[in-house]
Image (cartoon, rainbow, N blue to C red; front, side):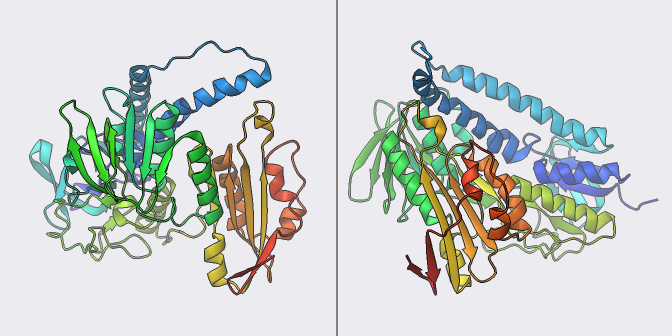
Length: 463
């Protein structure tokens, strides 16, 4: 009989923690998982899922406009923010229930409470005012939007958390940040009819993405009516007597808005968890430091997901959780593979990308072939929408291996998921060329770009 109450106790009920708990319980392990807020974590409750629902909602104005070119007469449309919020909340509550039931159905126990470490094997369940013990402990508490305490008036600002629960849709919003969260919300609010300004300190939005995508999306967003201020930061936020906000930015300009949203990064949720008491090492920003198998310096304590600040994506947390189960309970040590991860930005138009950007590939390989196509997708022709699609393949000229694929346009995220397979497998441009096209589709461009648009030698472009 085990000397501990649980074989595994998981702190954090998000995607990574729930997957680890459910699969471990299904193996016959005695498992408990504690979540202080709502099961489902950032992705389900205040991240990917509600955001994608908002993206869908914000796309309808363009769909209504485009319908005329296809012979449809669409009556004057109206939008009700409260209906969207209510329907979103209902769907999130349904998913939350499924997450908890998944653990329970596999034989695990769920606790709606904050859990803190007393020592390396002892956990305090705060809401129940009691302690339990566990042989193995998994930290999966995720992350949260970074605060900006240095900004005068930061207390008047919201983050992505609050954006999902606004009492009313603002007439004007300023969003500080240039990453995917800032960019996605800028497109969401603009699509819902909000006057939107994006404020970013960098020279171009979406750092670490391929520059072609960054520039093309920036240009398209501005054509749609989104104001983008690069090399700019907010310097002060003041509440006006009428309740609106004055946001002073670099150069002294003042933006008057109803909401100011900060999307300047995310930070790990590790404060007051008792990690230091248990001897767990943290990075300077508070992330749990783990080895290649997600084990901390304390051999029975592990961590997965955003709390480790490795790759902050939900599928990565789930993958890390599966590797943890193999390592901890199946005597089959597997380290998570963080190389060549496909990802999407649900902007409008969408971005889908996998592998190396042209700039990153040029630093690693002596000579590249770059295949690039810019065209108007068929769905926009009758609609009369002058919005271009971009497709790009980055290829090692020596081995012919496809190093990266980058797409801007409708359904780019769906394409990136499928492109992740051949690029992860290390297939070559010749393999792409031998693949028959599906016609008529936008994706056929990926297998019909036979001649390189240009080459890059020793980091320099050669036309």
